[in-house]
Length: 197
Image 1 (tube, rainbow, N blue to C red):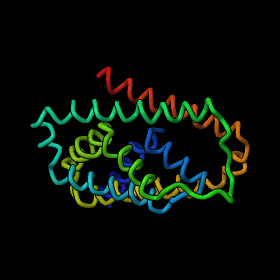
Image 2 (tube, rainbow, N blue to C red):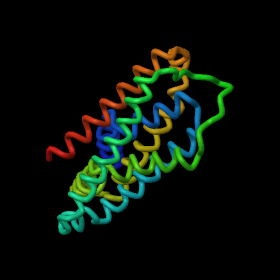
Image 3 (cartoon, helix red, strand yellow):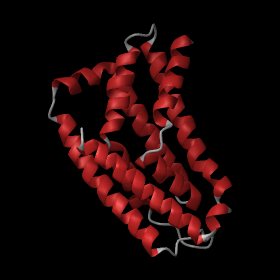
């Protein structure tokens, strides 16, 4: 039980930071577009990565130094592109929450979500290396992994569906412009941190 709680606590603390993936989930939750597939894509991706980390993939990543630069540059390029799109949306304005508007495409939303997840080098450091490494110090690594996976599911479902409570605020176009501007800053900041390491 101690390993399960430790895994949940560490997993939750790592995922709480506002990042590209979380900002995207929040945006989808506010719009009410494809929330279930998006939160499942995030949580299941985390579960796969956590399982791989606990199974020892972290050691393999450490032994293949070319993997880190590949994901760092690819992730930074994607974040710059996505941040620029968000900045353009903030500059252009006109966004608002229209309940009658047609939802965006499911494939595109899931593809963007998966790119924000799998092209982010920090997710590998957090799940494969950090969680994988800490799991070796526990009495029950499988329970530790289960705790971390549970934290991911709880967080993403809470973020995706809890965003509905903020919808009245985002009925105003100015709120969407502020959100898009904030998302752009988050994306560019993460990209800059990737390129400076």
